[in-house]
Amino acid sequence: MSLSIGIVGLPNVGKSTLFTALTKKGGLAADYPFAFTETNIGAVPVPDTRLDALAQIDRPAKIIPATVEFVDIAGLMAGSSRGEGLGNKFLANIREADAICEVVRLFESPGVMHVAGKIDPVGDAETLKLELIFADMATIERALPRIERELRRDKSYELKLAVAKKVLAGFDEGLRALDLSLSKEEREAIYDLHLLTMKPSLYVANIDEGQLDADFPLIEGKPMIPICAQTEADLSELDPEEAREYRESLGLDESGLVRLVREAYRLLGLQSYFTSGEKETRAWTIPIGAKAPQAAGVIHSDFERGFIKAETASFADYVAFKGEAGCRAAGKLRLEGKEYVVQDGDVMHFKFNV
Ligand SMILES: Nc1nc2c(ncn2[C@@H]2O[C@H](COP(=O)(O)OP(=O)(O)OP(=O)(O)O)[C@@H](O)[C@H]2O)c(=O)[nH]1
Ligand SMILES: [Mg+2]
Figure 1 (cartoon, protein in one colour):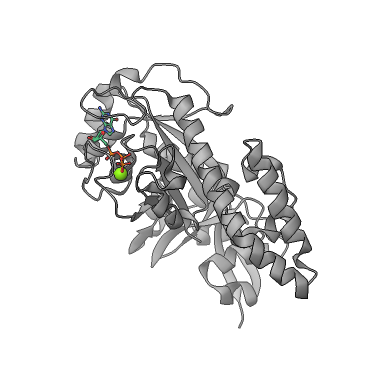
Figure 2 (cartoon, helix red, strand yellow):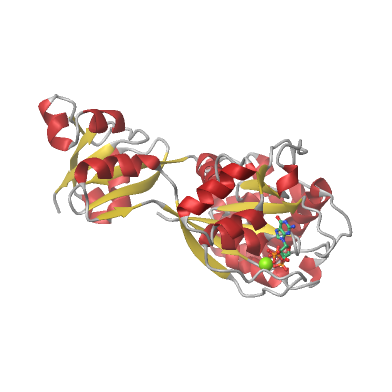
């Protein structure tokens, strides 16, 4: 399960700079709108110090972190949905994303043109929201005739039609599909429309170093994650030791990027469990509440189908008793079955039969 996050924002807010910082691909950031019109996808390791602790014990040949994929697209602007700029064309590239990261600009840089002419994060977020709503409106309006056709031969399309209309009505009041608190059945009925406003979103405030201690406005009641995208992009070019020193000198304690990835995890209700041995120490991403077979299925569908049991130790025990053998000797290796709800940080060894 690879989590994917689409980066959206107005032109020139630093999306590609953030993407570069996240993916260390080397920059294509340009100081005029639309210079960067190729969709770009990059995988980012989810930082997790627990992996290092496990690797100390098992000395694996490989350490494999969980990854999050980021997708960078061209900027949206007021009117994108009517064809202004290039952004709208690229929205299709984030239809499959699990979440949306909305970047708003707080940094002041006279050399970098601002499409709306002034720094206004709340206003920019509103523009973005409307463009996403317009894009979804178009998606639903395109789909309606098809749904109505299906309905004539299959009554089960009634719910889909009703929900699509309900969501459209919400759009008229400026509500995202997500704001309607749809039931699970309702959400599933329109799942294949891949509505952008159905995806959970988080906000990044792209700030200058001088703004680190500033207070930021809430956006739709939610705090923004402040990130100095330019600084982070610069730091991503340095070796880790140099980067740490530079970070300290700026008073940037934890990388904003780490925070971003963590918040994305929390937003989506995800957590990690581990497998660890001579071959590899690896983090796997699962939803909070997943049971053991579902967790096994993330590794391979055979593991889920043929699931028998899982030898499980908590992360703390695994470290304290120095691995699987130590946990077994200390009675800390539990045999968990199909109903076991996996806990964050569990170290698991699956037994299966296919
Ligand atoms: N001062 C400052 N400049 C920044 C920051 N982030 C980005 N920039 C500059 O802003 C300009 C635009 O950055 P991009 O990352 O290309 O912006 P974008 O949002 O991807 O723009 P489009 O793809 O055109 O929509 C570049 O010149 C960057 O160097 C920042 O945090 N501080
Ligand atoms: Mg860009």
